[in-house]
Image (cartoon, rainbow, N blue to C red; front, side, top):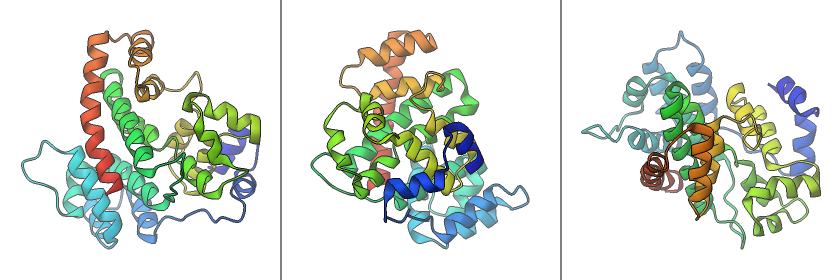
Amino acid sequence: MFQTLRRMLGIDPHAALKQTLGERELPCFSHTTQVVLRQLRDPETSMASIGDRLATDPGLSVTVLRLANRASNGLRRAIVDPAHAARLLGRAEIESLVISAAVQQALPAPTTRHFRPERFWQQAALRASVAKGLAEVIDRARARTAFTAALLQDMAIPLLVDAEPDGYHDLLDGSHSDLHQQERDRYGWDHTMVAGWVSAAWKLPEELTELIVDHHADHAPAAIGVAEHALSDDPEPYVESARTRLGLSPERSMALLERARVDAQELGAALTR
């Protein structure tokens, strides 16, 4: 994983992360999270065993169950058992939920004049819900990956606000669309690069790490690139981007956006409760 980051960015992620965060230690995933993620990548481990292991960490399992019920809101009965969730949803879905819950738990929740954790996660939830909805239209097999990448693409920002490298939080006064350029001008790095170093340190899937690092790039998947525009109060950039990059009509893209806004309210609540 770190070899990939070196190839992509030309630097040592270990050293860069240490220099950026200073004396702050990078938060760690719980032991249960690490074990569950290893088990999910081992086809010999049954989903029942994974669910049983997940249940040993109450905080993680509660968050995963909230997310699982949101993802499966068509069921008549709520999912109340991690083992049931694991069997019902399968490896890819459970891995996405475990990663999302673990990252949310691991990140600090600083509150400043420029940063509010609730707003941060609500925006992440909207971006993720839009990316998933768009991906289901153009490439359903990648919808879950698009969701997770869009949810976590700004995960370095709470870390940077908490570490406060040279008054980082002041940059949040401006437009988020040019935040990465301001970061590069001041520091020589941006939050996408820092998120990539963190992803590598946490041993997140390589595809997910690359999507997080590249989400501002021209070659980023269309669903993720278009979803970024959904955060604007003005829907026109989102509608135009969906038309030019995905061939969606304004009516179709707005219908997807409205559905995503409803989903995001529930997802944001699950992540901040």
